[in-house]
Length: 119
Image 1 (tube, one colour):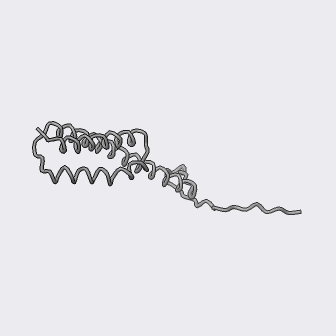
Image 2: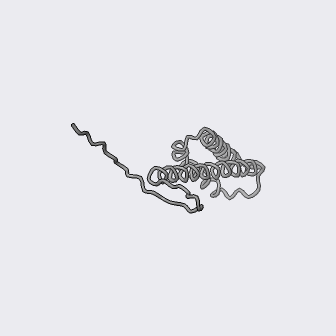
Image 3: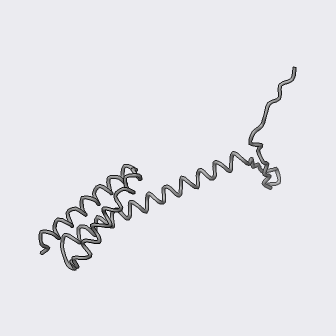
């Protein structure tokens, strides 16, 4: 059974992990960045105690795994958005069409077309 100090450290880490989960679910990526130092400090302190077997640590590990899955999903979503934005940029710069023969033809779109007024 962990002593009071170990228990307090583990509870503090669980609280940080719960806050991290909330930030991930709400999409508050800036808040995630601010939690990293506290999370690293708590994990380092727990590692220094060399707690090997604890039911509380099993619960912490489950929360870490849960948050890692959420982080992976968030990263995947960010990559998808970046890919879509790249595709939209490309579409604005290039127009593609297919001819009757099925061949693709690409046309570059002028970026700053100007309208000339004549009197």
